[in-house]
Length: 290
Length: 335
Ligand SMILES: Nc1ncnc2c1ncn2[C@@H]1O[C@H](COP(=O)(O)OP(=O)(O)O)[C@@H](O)[C@H]1O
Ligand SMILES: [Mg+2]
Image 1 (cartoon, helix red, strand yellow):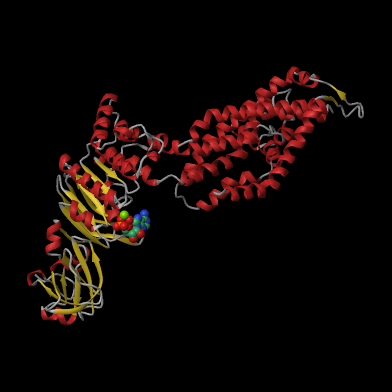
Image 2 (cartoon, rainbow over the protein chains, first blue to last red; image 1 turned 120 degrees about the vertical axis):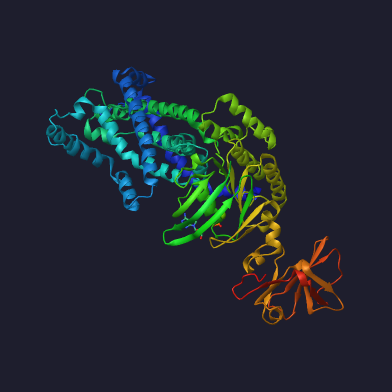
């Protein structure tokens, strides 16, 4: 891509892809913004009218809104912490030469291939159910009162389920990073008198910084819009205990048929997501230059 | 400090026996070079001494103490790796300070020692850079700096110069030799380059397929190689080795003459041949002489200075009688 000519040709060649992608993004975004300024309720079709900032004011002053933001942040943060820490530990474990390494690696990656709705239902009905669930069975056998997960610790339960789904992704990325570490560096550190813990904190962890950053950024994008797991387990409840922003938008537009309000919620969610992204980039972007 | 003794040490990787039983003494303050072709087990031997590999059998003593089962950190040895193995996310200062920090030395002492090492190695200007921002030679010096601050009982070097360009290699060779003269610490140095071995070593250990072929000072190996392997390996260009009729005249199965021990003449001599390639280096000229009837390969001879012999000329060669090496059918030297 050195010459002026090849650069022009390259721009020309990629333009169809860029145009399609831009259309793909801009048209729905434009329509969402447009709807967010309309009184637009599916119960009163054909009566749309300009609403100004009413939808936004309504959404922002909704008592569920602050709860939803708090739940979103807790959900994203909790899953990030669990998957990063767990992913590093699993990656280090899987990097050891163990018998049946290939099969173990496939098993660890398997949860990623299960659909979110399916895995959430499996967790809800087979593991966490207070009557029939496996956890209740163990608790009863050990003489404890079974926990009703979705009634007493609903958000933590969902964090657990989502972490289970995303742990393989983090493990996979971190495992490739662990494997790319030059073994002579570890040997040099060993000769320099660094024990296992010091080698982890001074050599391995800094080497993983870039991969951890990638894991956090990618997961944040997906975790901000968690929806299926909530819908099939708690439906946002009890109360607003597990309602995140995505779910609040869903309630607004599809349960209350308020397309205008839902769109306003969507725009707010986009803005908040961008704030989080900029914040994250600033915070860990420093790690990106070696 | 710095006496290393290997006693019947062996090493196998699975079924592959890389080092058959091996004995070796490395004396205090010595500069010992392991030299041998690639894959002969030099690195493995060094890693056994370092403790990065476990011996399959045998015993390693360091300073009279059994170190066979000691972990690397407890052996008081410092190693410089071929890839330098610097920590990429740490500055030069932190790289050099790392072993001291691990030893929980106090801050002032660390600063003093790192400052000294940086001064000795001309690194003071780069002290706050990362390894990625340094040239090959500078990285090499950082790796050496990280080794010397610990004041170890012995230094281990694994082909430290093989990633450097030729000019830099000569310079670093000198620097390492000077470092040894100043510190007087035992150094064990691995290389496949016999020039490095000859120029730096007090004692050369020639290895071939894990077996020690000969141990001796550079000049001992040069003057009286114990077998044809050492004869062919030490010296540059290689010693001419040939057998059959000519060797039989000297009562040997193989005879060898170094290029620098052959007289070249345009008029008369023992052997006759045709000049092939001539390498003019200015100070020396190397001729590859063909069709001598001594061996299939051309004979290499050295003529001093500027000699006007050219491709296709007929030359006569005469070996210096007292510089002829004789070997028996097993390749062992006949005294
Ligand atoms: N970790 C290992 N596993 C199996 N074989 C090895 C291992 N390390 C070295 N070897 C073998 O041991 C022999 C000697 O290797 P090495 O000591 O690295 O040679 P050198 O440093 O002299 O080039 C080689 O044939 C190599 O394939
Ligand atoms: Mg090697």
